[in-house]
Image (cartoon, rainbow, N blue to C red; front, side):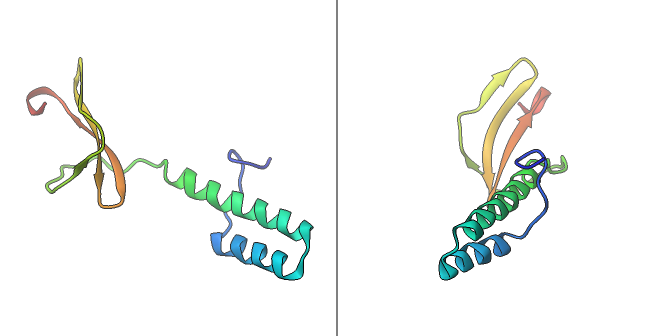
Length: 95
């Protein structure tokens, strides 16, 4: 199976190299293969980005990306910490 659900773990640099080689050699079939390699590499990066980080206390500065939302169990807000987007949750007395 190809695509986002079943993708081999390939290097992004390999995909770029195949695409560049296709343009240099003027081979459309190689360009299609390079496109598949790039799609697989970007799919791998996307799936790796879905893995949640471990829940832990944090002290520092964050950038708010959206307004906080108050729900029945606490407050949530999307923030940026460095290059990472994180959803913060505060419940009970912390909210």
